[in-house]
Image (cartoon, rainbow, N blue to C red):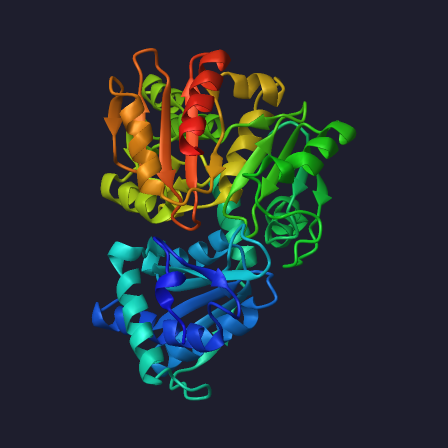
Amino acid sequence: MSDLSQIVKAYDVRGTVPDQWDERVAEALGAAFTQLLNSTDEPGDAVVVGYDMRGTSPGLAAAFATGVRAEGRSVIEIGLASTDLLYYASGSLDLPGAMFTASHNPAQYNGIKMCRSGARPIGQESGLAEIRDRAQAMLDSGDARPAGAPTRPAERRDLLPDYAGYLRKLVDLSGIRPLKVVVDAGNGMGGFTVPTVLGDAALSPLPLEIVPLYFELDGTFPNHEANPLDPANLVDLQRAVVEHGADIGLAFDGDADRCFVIDERGEPVSPSAITALVAARELAKHPGSTVIHGLITSSAVAEIIREHGGKPVVARVGHSFIKAEMARTNAVFGGEHSAHYYFRDFWFADTGMLAAMHTLAALGEQSLPLSVLAGEYERYTASGEINSTVSDQAAAVAEVRAAYPDAVADEMDGLTLRFPDGAWFNLRASNTEPLLRLNVEAPTRDRMVSLRDDVLDRVRR
């Protein structure tokens, strides 16, 4: 019997297939999702469903669609998609949607990201817990909808050209200087979307020479995991940027909703610097707007937002929290340390592709190399995210808190401690894995290393 509490996370469904969930579970989740929509008078009479390149994705998506149709809504199947393509479909069609992907997780995982119409997020506190409970009740009673019992139709649509055209209108790259761009798709959905968005001559040629790495769709990830947050998965891209004499490198995760950037030297550009760069561009178009930044982005982000006349607002880590805060404040843009970037012009949803296009535009509109351009947005030294497997997470966090009694504490999301010299760290439990995640930032490298090592010593004892 499936225990949905093991796979329904803070803001999505995520687990191994078939031991933690399978097509029967997907069908129950589709029915439960639709029951929630019907009970809250969600507009429209259809649900958009897309899926990534994992071998289990088509079957799970089809089973979910059966559950949707059995509960009285039709299904618009968009087939292979990046997560932000699904959000485009939900936003442009004003329909709820479901994307089948486990993002950056290994091959044996799969998951679902669900949203209401207009790409509005669904998390534990905004319907996901209710979906879990409804589906669990069906599974426990044996009342999961049987295959072949749908009452509403399904239709297939190809929205990739429309998605590409929409992004091209938001960021005009036609007038930039020629750039050589290495793109590592990690055998994920970037290999599906990048050729159309950045290379489709039918939309009008762009002054970009794309050097593709691992564009073949393959959910077994034969070259490296599609998780650019792990530095080991950037090595091939870094090498290729230098070998090809490229201006920039872009790395997408498995479902291509996140984008990481490499400069011309083969060095990573921090997501905080990209957040600040894109924020400055959006504030130039929309002066005085609010910009959301994740709790553990660099202190420089809020400083630069203020310097450009914007209003920085901090939010908890996680896409459903960021999107909710974006909508509440009507923010023009939002960014996280994990390289999720959110845009008001994209229904407050996250899109790695649009962030990449802003970065290409910023680079191509001037003559400086990316390392110099990005350096304008880097002010502090950061540790990057460091994970520790800890048996008693609460006890470890409590011990760390007690070790720094004079620091200013914030418990918005995990434990954040700030020190008078500008150094800070955040220690929080992962929403999707049994880990404690540590991020440290300080004015100097020596101070960062000292603080990082001291906290890690306490966490890992």
